[in-house]
View (cartoon, rainbow, N blue to C red):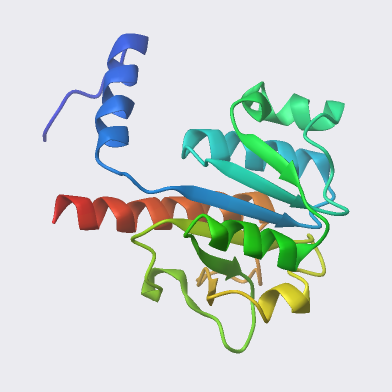
Length: 181
């Protein structure tokens, strides 16, 4: 058994995260394409802050981060991530591309590949859509890749906020794997 099974102190926790932050130079972005549930947006804001997302593009009718229910779930993290409202999904994709990001939609389509099979070692922007309707077709036609999160259970899909967290982890894992050789 390696290590001790005792919780880290706040100082040790900061050191641990600082070390991992230094291991990646990736720029991360998110496009929320019509995510309407404020609790989902709040949870996404919290994950975005945890994975150091640089910018979130909000496509109408995505709920605003200033909504009180977003703040309840985000626990202040909505202030830690830059957000920008855009006219539509293609405008958000163009904005991410202008920053040199590869744009990857998380969506269940016939053309989707398991997320870990997609090349995501550079700067990446993930796109997620409405809780029931998913990513708009106009956006799917414009992205670089479409990926999905394979599941073993009897449920067909994950909550959008959980999908974002898993997606951000996979992008970050790939970036760390490349950086560590």
